[in-house]
Image (cartoon, rainbow over all chains, first blue to last red; front, side, top):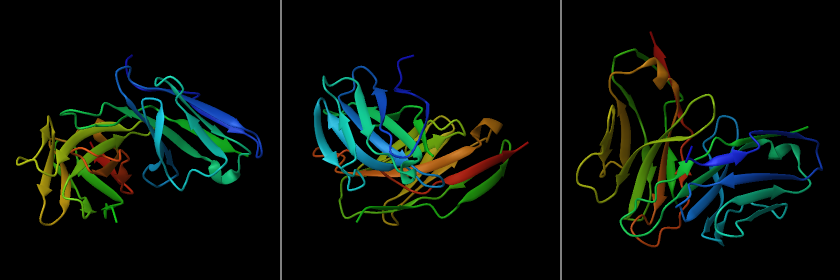
Length: 116
Length: 118
């Protein structure tokens, strides 16, 4: 399977705990995105990387959230001191930008976080 | 400000019939791209079709076509010959600056839940 993969698929945690999610993009893609989706809504942008550089962060990404893409390949999203409001589906996407590319984003299956 | 509006929370269609899902958008950037994604109950967002703001022809991909009316700022998805497997949430999305200088992130609508009846 050469699509975007995410781990874990489901995470249940207690309020105040830290959690970390991993995303492995399509191998030749240089851009990687994180989105959050709550029930009944479309995905909302959190942040994105071009290679290893984090180029943009949404105001939704509070200080408790941090994302890395250390070698321009996989990425991690960490949430510290989780709150019940963090419960959501976290989606990762990747794309190939540049040249004639349409920069279409391809999504992974998501990580569903439940904070008790 | 960028905005995507999908006014149909839910739609029903009979198997083998065509259905149109509405999407209107708002942007001041002349260079943008419009995307449709399908999200089955499993949760994964599946890319369906893309339309660039400067594309002269409406995009088509198999049973999917995009009815792009630039002056009206609408980008409706048409699914022909509906199948039971088409039952899912459908999201319209937009990205500005599609031709160079793209900021990258997509703006999504709230989605339309399509149910295909046998």
